Amino acid sequence: MADEPSDPALLGTRLRHLLELLDGDVAAVYADLGLTGFRPRYTPVLIALDRLGSASIRTLAETTGVTHSAASQTVARMTADGLVTLAPGTDARQRVVTPTDRARDLLPVLHAEYAATATAARRFEAELAYPLSRLVDEALAALRQRSMRQRIADVAPDLVPAGPTDGGPVTPPDDRRRHQGDRN
View 1: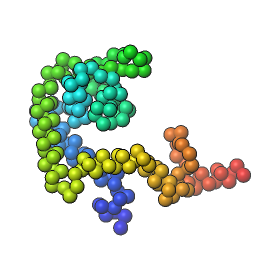
View 2: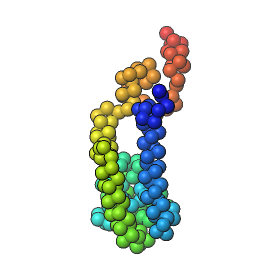
View 3: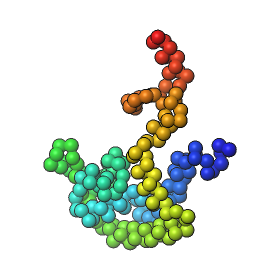
View 4: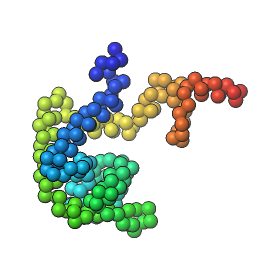
C-alpha cells in the first residue's frame, strides 16, 4: 500500500520528519540555554572555526560534511545573526569566514552542548538495529555513485528527459510527447 509509513516512496518525507524531530529538539536545548533563534546547523561551523581559526566556505563545507551551497547559505545566515564575518580570500572567488567576538563567547556552551548531543546521538543509535550515521554515509555514497534522478530514469525513462537538465521548468510527460510530435 502506497501510504504505509515504511513505503520507500515516502523516504524523503520520512527523512524530513526525522530531521525535524532531531533538529527541533536540539534547537529546544539551545532555547533552554538562552540561545533563542540559534540554529543547530551553526554549531558544527563554529566548532570548526574554533579549531581552524578563519576558513574558506569550501573548507567549512568539507569539514562539516555539507555541500558548498549549504555551507554558503549557513554562513550567510550566521553573518546576518552577527556570528561570523566574511572577507575576500587570496582568490577573488574565495570568501574567508571568521567568528565574531559574540561567537567566541558562545564557544564554551557550544562545546558542552556539542559533546552532550554527540553522546545522546551515540546512545540513540545504540537503540537502533543499524547505526543511523553509518546508514546515512552509505546512502550518500550510493547517491554520489548514481543519483536518485538517474535511478528514477532507469525505472521510468519517459518521466526523465535524457541528458543533463538545465534546471528550467519541468514539462509534464504528456506535454513533452505532444511537443516532440509538433517537431516531426
